[in-house]
Length: 556
Image (cartoon, rainbow, N blue to C red; front, top):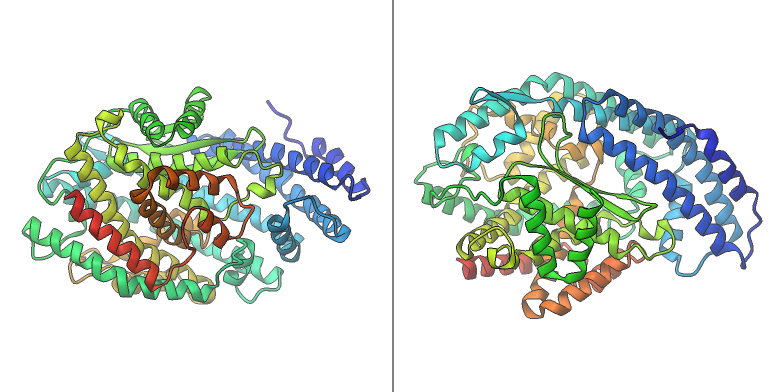
């Protein structure tokens, strides 16, 4: 068992603090600090991962809490001192402009009073995980997680779909009060964090914290408007097509995933080991280097893919920063959505590998607006290799079907993303209202009606289920404001994919080169290196929508 005591780290920080800085030693000093940060980050990753692979593991939870309280808070304080020392020296290693920009922001944002608040915030997000992770229902005389019910939404038996949807929804509503209490606590904490740092609201604080230097909150609101104008009509066309194909006057929520031609759901794999092996084949088909990266992950046990009771919800890719190796966590149950998730998280993993040669950890700190380009572009770049002849999952016909479904989901995603992002803009700029969960329910419902095309979908009898949709989006509890990045990145990914349709080898070469920059460039520069434009205006959305429509027709 590792010694978790803060005392063991103090001499290293003392050494850095007491060292004189000169132009001759600044690079070595920064490397020492970077190595120390990576080692501490390695411990942080280990204790975090252990809480997600088994949310019922009380010892893992205790280790995580001890790390947050004993190590993380102290590290933040000592790092603040080192950042000030470094900035006051007016020295800098080579190729350090972007991390320097971020560090200046971090120093200005720092408040010692916020350290225990950050810890409390992180603990509450784990409480949320425990609630979601414990949600099970009885299905076919077996206790199953709600995630295990998701494949039922793909079955052709409409009554069965309705039963499963209502069962899962009713189970979620049982935790309504408990999640509301977590929300009220977490929102109060976030309001205090902003106040302690001298910000008018948490949105303004979080913008600075996320180092969103290249766009503003108003840009996001404009993005929502563009989605409403350009994407919602296209999504509406897809729903109209679905309604007609299924022979329904109105769709119900349980009609949104089933195949419109009455085909059985795609069953790409039987277990997590098959998912792993076939995704390895696909990555190797895209590019041999990427295949080699994934092989390392398999050899070193850096994958936890299958769903089981007690696992935290969702999927993620994180990094063991000292080893410079990624770890992928997900909840696979045998659907094509799992294949997409695996390929998506693989893109994040490749980002870790490709940027691993950058000497300082702060150079590898990638904004999510581009980190998600790595994952979403990989979904599209890998899509031609889903076929069995490439070692993948499907016949040519089923591969085309899977690709069409993916592209249609891209269109349907943007309006949902706008709901999640707009909700957070409202909540954090109207916190007194948002402290009342009934106001949150009302705002979420209003946004749902704005973006989710209720003229096609009959939500009657589902009012409470729709209103509490904000309970089911873990980003709201774990990583506030982290969601619009998916929408931006999808536009970047589609541009890279568009390039690959003209010149596949060059597109993949540019993609890897951009990943290799880590976070050591501005967002516009990273997008440009990948062959895309950092833009989310009407024109860019129109390009994306046209390309998707054209490719769906071609695949059909």
